[in-house]
Image (cartoon, rainbow, N blue to C red; front, side):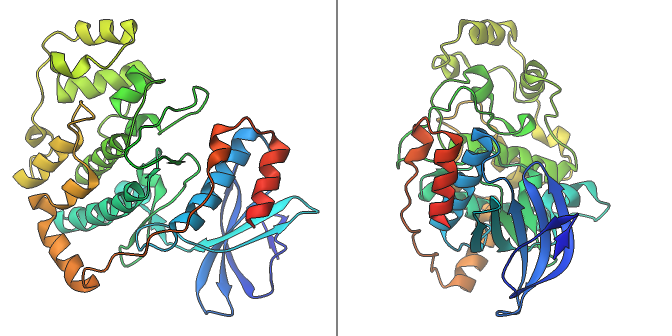
Length: 347
């Protein structure tokens, strides 16, 4: 069948339903799996390795989603196929109805119960990633897919990284990490420094604030404007919190803030509960070492009722640990063709 003029050469078990979108990543459509009766999304990526960065994006996503297996709050791969002759990759995934960005921008009223339900699922998904040594590095409303029943799944793992448990990550200098509005301050003040799971938790805080306020909390126009917006709200960091930042330029910027006071979140979100504001405060903590983890956020009073219900429903059973996968390609200087061969091997 054809989608936006692009021929999908997939198994006859998939019956085309409707196009979903197209972009630099490829073309996506909805289809029905005749064998299971399930509706799925099929993403066609062609060529498999247009540029090295695209090939790494695709390989990471395929490896990580297979490595992570099935978790109710992480998008799952159902099937993979490749048409090597025509340089086409087909990824069959969960089909969702919308994403958090569209819901936030819509006129649909969002209650505190909605905010709690969405945040709880996001935290459960992020905890699962972090427990398995995965940093997502690009959490934003558009990457949180939703069903009509409000089930949330984290998607788009093209910038994610697998790191050893308890280790920190040093990002490649050339690589874009986290859409600016959701980027932790340490990534901008020291872009070549080490960082860990706390960068994802800053993004979770920004998303939570956006659900509460129906608009981005820090919509920076450039990286300097981004930092200014952040410190206008969280105030100038305490002297001890900036010692790890080695860039003299960043230190000068921080000193220029003077004694900028913190703005209470209560004044930005007057209808939110004290408990919600306390959790947001702990997520949007300047010092990464003091920023709340996904595990501790789930134990916070704001999440207690959701966690109790979750444990009751699941019987306390967590998804099985994921399969092992080789992510050493991220540390090597591989060519496009090397990466393409790894993608085909994975299929």
